[in-house]
Image (cartoon, rainbow over all chains, first blue to last red; front, side, top):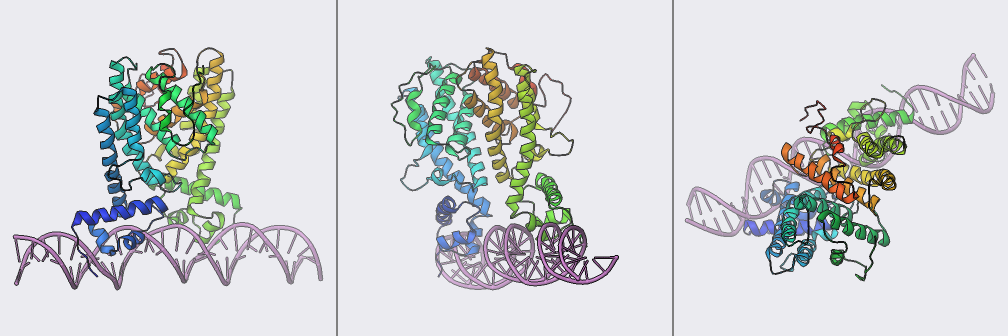
Length: 221
Length: 221
DNA sequence: ATTCACCGACCGACTGTCTGTCGGTAATTG
DNA sequence: CAATTACCGACAGACAGTCGGTCGGTGAAT
């Protein structure tokens, strides 16, 4: 039983299988044998296309990242959308999406206590890729007088690092209430960082899916 | 050749060896065989004291953390030290120290591209343990009118998450200049978060070893 | 004060699993 | 009908964890 395909097709088959398996069982929990079985190829074939198991992970992250960042970048450049709305949409594009309707929901099930390495690599990619995109939008906001900070990039870096660590990962166990109050504090803090008016960013709360009627018309402080 | 010791003594011998080896070669790069050789015991003995390799790491992190956090806590409670100075000292206590002069400089060489799992676990412990300590100092500062924020805890959480990710790890490659400008921006951002006067936190810059006006003298790297 | 039963600490051969390699084979292409 | 490209699967090497068994010390009983 021998099926020959174009190298890139095989590569993607392997990545697809790896994506699903890593999501289910984690990187360490997935053996190359699992991938072999799922794709239906032999050991040698896998190592013909990838030089190591880790190489598969790297390729997977790059593939996903390219797709996701591109989508966010597109949105960021669309000056027809108001700044605040655009931030919201750009961030949304990073969370789920992908475009072609296929899976690519790595972000979904990656938050396992396992996959530490994968986690780290993804975060590195995110920290590298996302802040520049958001900072460009912020800069526009500054020109429009919506924001006011000398450090748009560093602000976004801080925001992204914090949000991905606390909200996307399972670094801190939280009840639904704790989460909600963290989100409120977070938004208030971001407003300060960006020099935005108090409450001006409350509309972005919908980014944090789950519960929470956006009803929050509270004026604290 | 058979040497019998008290269980806790052996446990600590094993942890000492693991600490050094993990620091040198990383967690994945260290085999249980390496530890065995270094301590001079047999396989079975290791698994008599620890239930798995990961269990060794957990114990190691807990041991280190207990020491470090305790030191920082002590400082935080010393109301004779001015608030700003106290923050500085508490953070210093987290970085190196340990107390008894022995090693415990995990934080030193842990920042390797390897040890992802260890990294994650340490960060989790830090995120859990440090913000409460710092927040208590901040709260005092608020009473004294030095700071002004409704969210001292969340601010510290954000600060700690960001600083450990960007400055302590190698998440982002930076030149010395980039690092310096990141630090400046960071301090300015923290001042905003805490509602502190502009420039009031510049003195804490010495926390970030290396260059900067502190003249500490060490030329690392 | 000697014997003996007991138990915690210790040993190391062994097992199962996993990653990565290598020589060889089938399909494809020019 | 070469030469290249994709593929195969047996194999080597390494490693984490297990298990039956051993040894030294300690306290109780003789």
